[in-house]
Amino acid sequence: MRRDLIFIHSAGKQGGDDGSSRFLARLEAALDGLFRIVAPEMPTPECPDVELWLREIDRLVSNSKSDARPGAVLAGHSFGGSTILQYLGRNREIYRDDNWLSAAFSISAPFWGLKDWEVTDFALSAPEIAALQGLKDLYFCHSADDRIVPPEHQDAYADHFPHAGCIRLRSAGHLLSDGDADDLIEKIAAFA
Image (cartoon, rainbow, N blue to C red; front, side, top):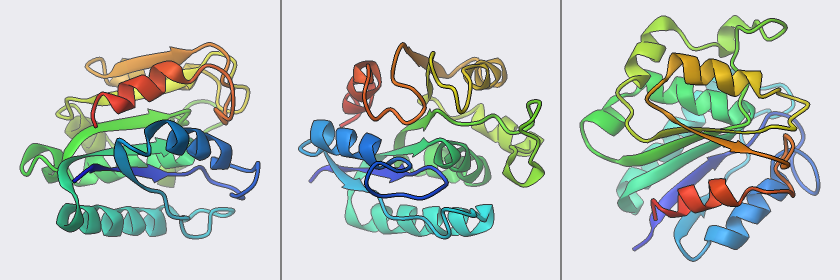
């Protein structure tokens, strides 16, 4: 039985060349034999409601806990990357008590609260930040050439979570649809 890789896509239109679609296709091509990849369309992606997304992530986690081998990987891209952090910050028993989660990857995620990114509903609260200090295998990945969510966002996460691993890609852009995502893919594969 394979572990689950639960992938939460970005906000915005999905499918074809839009959103996280091409990046997800890369992950599926590279990791499909290693993981059971679970990547549903999230509710209202073009106008995301964080509470709806958190409920959907909770449903996915609940299903995975009953259907798959322990040690799942949770990965989120862009808005999905910041939302998985909120989810884990509110549900620390997932990685503290029952060992369901082996790693979390926040990829090209905005650090809500930086200048021009002040959206209170999307920002991590102080208790969520404190809770995430206990997540051992937490990784932040960003590309140096990301023009949508600049790498300063990864730097802000690194400042708040010094225990986390940071993966800096050179040329994958924001969408990671091409370019050098090998370091990220190899790190995820290590948790299969």
